[in-house]
Amino acid sequence: MTDDDAGSGDGADPPSADGGSGDEAGPTVEGVELAFDTQESLPAVAQDVDSGEVVMLAYVTREAVERTRETGLAHYYSRSRGELWQKGETSGHVQHVAEVRVDCDGDALLYLVDQEGGACHTGFESCFYRALDGEVVGERVFDPDEVYE
Image (cartoon, rainbow, N blue to C red; front, top):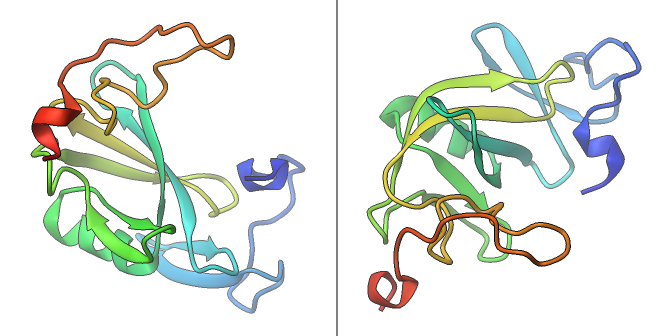
């Protein structure tokens, strides 16, 4: 992810439906256009609705956003596997989505979630369980060897 992916912060207007920014305008969500990148995806930050803790970052496509809205469960797009997936489909550690927010540029989403179990496939409550120096600062809440057999 480049610095530009986090939003320009320059006060410029968001991308228009005619593609004024070079990004393709996406579906309208409650009147907000989403600016998908050339890979047809957007970053989506999942944040615990109660604690405010950021639990993970993943990518979504139009279909993932639609499925999330239809089911109330977080759906994402795996860029490495090239497929749509529901968070917790294998582990049972689903994310109930309370609200989806869109950033000022329409190029990133915030999923406010009620996380069941750990969000990270490594067994931690959050995918952000390490400090830059490698120190483990998060809590391991499940054993991945028992969940992903």
